[in-house]
Length: 217
Image (cartoon, rainbow, N blue to C red):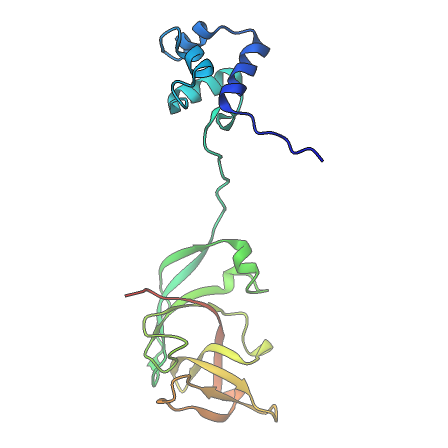
């Protein structure tokens, strides 16, 4: 199988000139240069590459992409899915009072990246901040966590969740009890308490934590 060779910008420009029966001097004048400019670029390699404005004009004149004449490859900018950052924090300590969920800002994610992490719709995602160190070393004070609000009690499995318990908003590790009748609520930091055999009816599971971001000091 033959591998196609990459055409050098000087070779490409010479080919375009030949195919369109153009003259070096006329093209040089077209871009506002001295009559020998195009010939020197092709035959002597001076300058080594076309100036950006010269390249743009020549590409437009011949109806080709600037990349053919040495321009940088144009990458398609992805459309990012905006996920709201809520003015809310979930305690990784002894519990924080729940309060309003006003949108503070948003962060854009590649939709393909999100689809690899959740089967739910992106409109169920939000980002909130962790306060306290009860989930250290997994989560630290000030971490931002991405929460899937549609991945809750209906698909409950072992993992880290944001939940409301006794009017407090928490981020904790949940695990089903072998009996299937209750769950354990655990802190990764052994200096903090954990709870065993908690009835699901006592808990309002907000959503599963999919990802976290951390600012390095």
